[in-house]
Structure formats: C-alpha cells, structure tokens
Length: 315
Ligand code: XMP
Image (cartoon, rainbow, N blue to C red):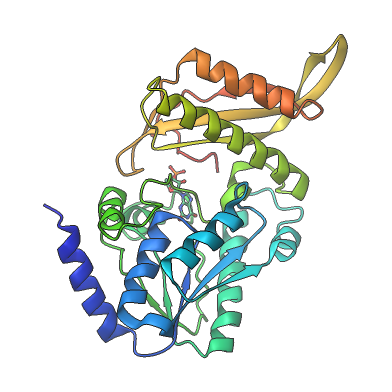
C-alpha cells in the first residue's frame, strides 16, 4: 500500500543528498511537476529555481493561473515567455513525432539558458512511470516520445533527477493532497501542450481555435460533473482536425473546420475508456463551439474510441 507521508519523507531526504547545489525544475502547473517542485523546494529551498515556459501552446488563462499558484506555494520561480520561438520552430511541421521532438528540444535549450544564468548543475523533472514506459523505456515499443523523456538531447550538461519516476498518477495525486497542493485533482496535460491537439501545422491561428474549444469542453464538463450529471473524467479536451467539411451558416454554404471532443476514464493513462457523456452535455459543447467560433468551426464530433487501440491524445 502506497504511503504518501513516507514517500514525501524519503524523497525529500533523497533529494537533499542528490541535489548539492543550484537546481532548475521545469514546472507546468500540472500535478506532476508541481509535486516534484514542492518536494525539491522542501529539500533545498531557494537553491531551486522553478521555470515555467509559456510555449504558446498552453491552455486559456494558464499562465496567469500558474503565476498565482507558484506565488502561493512560495516557490522561487520565473516565467519565460517563449511562444514566438516555439511557433517559429513548428512552422511547417506536421509530423507528430517531429513536433514532439522539436518542442522537447526547445524546452531543454531554454532550461539550459536559465540554468547557465543561475549556474545550476541539476535538472529535476516530474516524469512519472507511464511517461517513460510509453516512451520506449525498454519495456515497450515507442508509442510517443514524451517531451520530458524522449527528446532529451545527448549533450545536455545538467544532471537529471526524477523523484517521481517510479510512481503512477493516482499516487502522485495522493502526495499532492498530503502536501495540500491545490492542483491535486487537475487533469493531466501533455508536455507539448496544444501542439499535439492540432492535427497538422500548429500555427498561432489553429492554437487559438483549439484553446477556445478546450476551454468550452472543460467548462461544460466541469459544470455537468458539479451538477451530478456525469462522472469526473480522467481527461477531457478538444482537438482540431486538419480537414474541412461543408456546412450551412444561416442559409449560406459554409466550409469550416472540425473539432473533436475527447473525454476518457482511466486509472493511470495506460488504458482508457471513452466517457459516456450525456447527450445534453455534448449538445451544449457542440452548440457553444459552433456559435462562439462561427466563422471557423462548423462541425463537432465526439470520439468514442477506447485506449487501446486509440491513445488519449490524438498525436
Ligand atoms: P496517450 O495520448 O499516449 O497519453 O494515451 C497518455 C497520457 O500522457 C499524456 N501525455 C504526455 N504527458 N508529456 C507528458 O508529460 C508528453 O509528451 C505527453 N504526451 C501525452 C496524455 O495527455 C495522457 O494523460
């Protein structure tokens, strides 16, 4: 039986012996990196510099939320606004693995830049077990290169420390609750962000569409869960498909984009079942997306694929 108190105690003690100087950590506002940061902060305090990179592929209001969260947690943190750099790197790129590798590489380069500035020697990451298992960590074929594992460049000159690499999400959440971290129940969000929820080129325009669609799907599902209409899904979001279809707007022909709504139940992301969302909720999501993005989206579909054979994200 996993004991979060013991895990916290032994991990903080272990980090105290491993981290012998300035350390940087990649924080995203998600439960994994936030837990890793709080544990490292307990071990070495202000020797830790938590770095949040705004890649431009973050969710609606995410950067503001994160600023507030880390200020409240008392972390020594900084925000790096790098969206222009990421958009430029992904220009013209449509292959999902290439996107992941480019984003991962950029991430690490930015950390290296900050790390040099603060003369850091160590890099802490919130990698959890399924991240490296699914990135071909020896047990399985490479399904996707998770940006915090697969794309680490070989010449990285920081020593990598991963305090959560042997535990699973439900255990990380238990640790987060014990540490009283407000994002304990937050749904997972992939490292490459909205870029892997845009099939095809992840342009700023496409990002704006999927960001709004994700926000609408999240809001409506959160509301439905609160009202007791459905179970809390493990993850719920929208993705933007690289196809257009014919529709009608008023009585005029429209040729618009397609948004897919994805929601799944899972325990550890290794397998998942699509969420049985009530039709009344799907209705609200569909109407809001097509009304609020009238000029660009004219079709909303719901993904009814389990994992396997699907994965949770579309890329
Ligand atoms: P898939 O799509 O492979 O995703 O079923 C399994 C879980 O991992 C998340 N995910 C990522 N997490 N870096 C991460 O930290 C990544 O590159 C990444 N890609 C996918 C995904 O959202 C799901 O929770």
